[in-house]
Length: 133
Ligand code: ZN
Image (cartoon, rainbow, N blue to C red; front, side, top):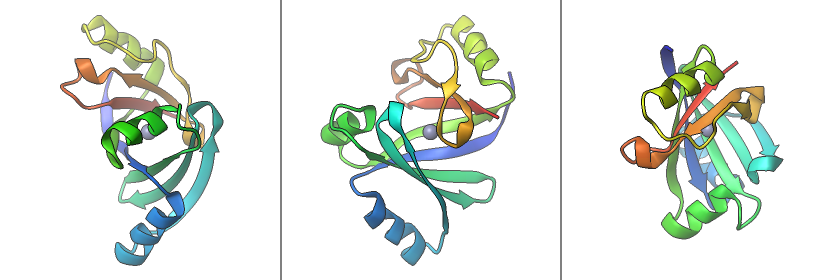
C-alpha cells in the first residue's frame, strides 16, 4: 500500500449553496462539480486546490452520516481522504495492521472513485478515507 497524496478533505456544511459562495467569492476557488451521492445521503461540491480537492458535503437527510455529524458537532472538517493505488487492497492491508474499518471492502463514491473508510476510533480521532481510481 502506498499513499501518493491527499485526494481530498471532506467538510460538512449546512447549506451547499451558501458555502460555495464563500469558497468562490472569498477564497477565489472554482466549484467544478456538484453531485448527489444517494447512498450516502449527501450532495457534494468539489474545488481543486493544487493536487488536492475540497469536498463540501451537505446532508440530504437527517438520518444520513453527514446529517448525524452536523447535528452532533455542527458544520466543519469531517474527514481526510488519501489517494492510494488500490483502495480494496489498502483496506485489507490496514485491517491486517489492526485498524478497525467502516468499510471492509471498497465501494463507489463521488466522482466514480473506489472508496472505503477507516473507523475514527482506530485512527486517533480522524475519520480517514482511502480512494483509488
Ligand atoms: Zn470523501
